[in-house]
Length: 82
Image (cartoon, rainbow, N blue to C red):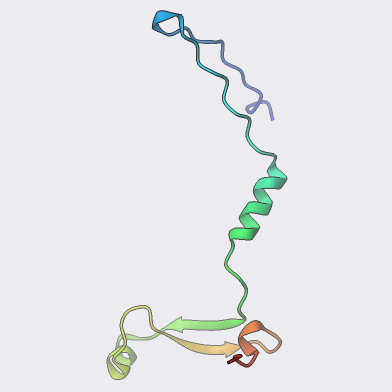
């Protein structure tokens, strides 16, 4: 807390101009809510990248994965709506 309350003396720039005080940091609780809203959504899927051999076999590019498990009662277990 002491670091956040550090105050520097007002600086004078050429011509007598002064710098405005910076805006205070938002409260930590606001930051935590923002971080939680930006986190990836839970899907309930466990996956791993395909090996080079499987990528060649199935003619897929980098980033292809195999699904190992889908948790029951997860969004991924819901039937697709059409």
